[in-house]
Every structure is written in C-alpha cells, then in structure tokens.
Length: 169
View 1 (tube, rainbow, N blue to C red):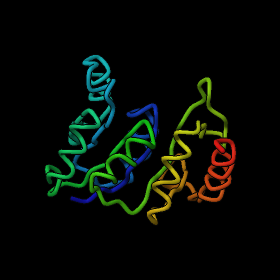
View 2 (tube, helix red, strand yellow):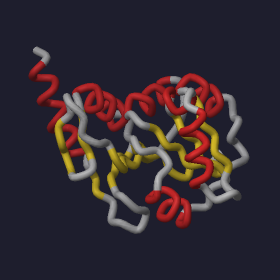
View 3 (cartoon, rainbow, N blue to C red):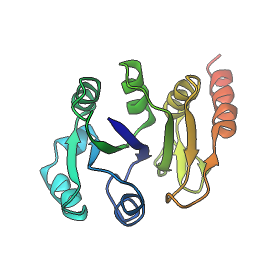
View 4 (cartoon, rainbow, N blue to C red):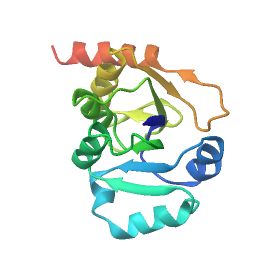
C-alpha cells in the first residue's frame, strides 16, 4: 500500500480535493474515515458523485478503516486518506499504522476551538493528538493545495501543547 497523502480536512471530499489534490496525485482510491459519514448514505452519494469515476471511494468508521489498513486491504493500491480529526490519525498509529507525513488542510472553527492559522482551528484534544503524532517523528504540515508551499506547523503545535499542559496542572 502506498498512502499517497493522509489529510485532516473536516470537509472531507470537496472542490480542493477533487480539482487540486486528485489531479496532482496518482491515487486509486480515497478512504474517508468518519463515523458520521459512514452512517450517512446521502453524504456518501454526494462525495462519490464529486469524484472522477476512475477513483473508488470508501467511507468507513474509524474502527473499520483502521482494521482495513492494518489488515492490508489497500496494500496494492495508492490511496488518499481523509480524516476529520487528528485523534483519528493518532488512534490508527496506536494500532500500528505507519505514516511519514500528515497534511492539515482544514479544521474549521466551532465553539471551543481557537484559530492557529487561517484554515486551522484546534481544541485541547486536537493539540494533544497532534503532539502525539509529532512526537513519533511524523512531519506535520499545512497547505491547501499540493502545489502550495508546505508550512511546517510543529512549532505552533508545540507552543500550544505547552500551554495545554500548563493549564492542566
């Protein structure tokens, strides 16, 4: 299996993914990891309609996606993984998934989150999960489109992690 990119983007499949990322990447399948989308047939249908017919869409719960990845279901394919939360990626890594890099594309503001960058808003759980990922030597970068310059956001994350740790004392 070649995980071409693993991306946190709470919008999942949308225009930037289809017109930007998929046109620049050689992928056979997009694996969406979202418990809510896995139980929403309408959302699945809309995402499938947005993708080129040559790219398969799999929408799975975190539990099912983790098992599929660890069990080798995608070993002979190039895949793009889309997840909504950093905790999902941390969970998969705890279960044995090996990754080299994590792209943060869009984590939008909701109550309880604070803005780190224009397209990245986080809460304490997000910060802890991203720290857990980064502490394993994984590159964490942000960019909207694949041709954009990578922005290493680990310095921001580590600063926020220290703040979260201080607040919990």
